[in-house]
Amino acid sequence: MTKYAYRDENRKNIIYANKATDEDRNNEFYCPNPNCNAKLYICSISGSKNAYFRATKAHFKHIKNCYYGNSVANFDSSKFDEEKFNYEDAINNILHNSYGEHSIKPPRTLRQIYSLCKSFPVDDIYADRKIGLLLLDDRSEYMYQNGFYGMRIIEAK
Image 1 (cartoon, rainbow, N blue to C red):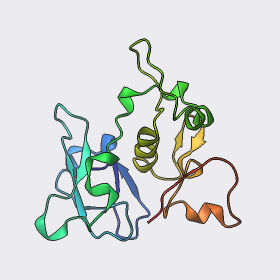
Image 2: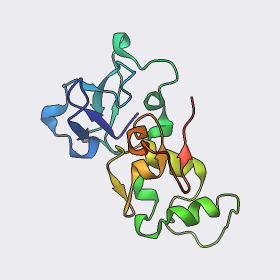
Image 3: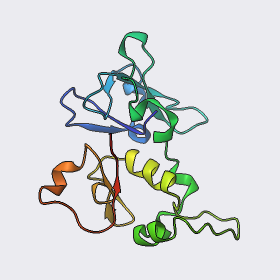
């Protein structure tokens, strides 16, 4: 499950699930993972859940261990307050769980931040930070031609 996919096999034209229309319902889209040949289809476009993309055809499933083939990539933005998200604070406080009032909070666990980063293209912005500057993975490695400095989540394979 993923909130975005690509309209073209070269993965240049992004489509967001929440921007898909009824005309997109039967179209094939491509997995965000360039190593995965899964063909995705829009699901729940006018349902009770938020729209998402999923590989529904048996011959075009995700490759083994494709991040976008499981529900971890399904970051629910409505459960978090983007304006309160501060990446440095979240990473610094990751081991210090705090419990308090029940309100919408910013992403604060490593899993939540990782899910956030994998749910959006690397050039998207969340809380005034480019996703590719939060997570170093195979999609964002081009941003680090000269190495990196500062705090990053690094996806290793």
